[in-house]
Length: 118
Image (cartoon, rainbow, N blue to C red; front, top):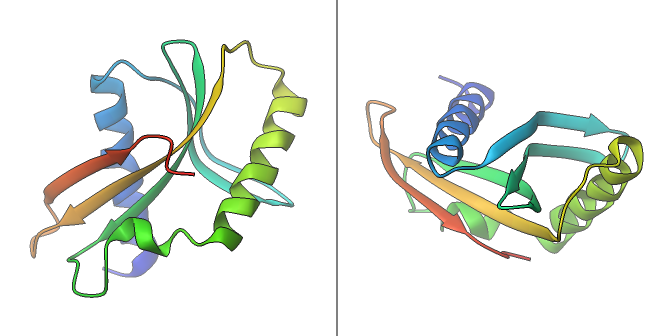
């Protein structure tokens, strides 16, 4: 399984996790010139932009550690475009990271949501 397939798998696991926790998913893989946002959802009226990071272990650091300042800037700029284009109704904005650790059989070993990650 290549990195893209693992990433897609992780995004699907994250979407299931968020739905189970009451998040209304508005968009997945929202792409514009400034970048991409993995998942966009409404959580109790708050518009949340989720960056999903999936790994098969933590020997190279946690998944969230790969969300650099550069990546954060692109996500924020993309969020601005989304808001201008879609004009969603919301009571606040938040940027979360969803970390997914898979076991050797590509099953979810751990899911961790970092609220207000940046």
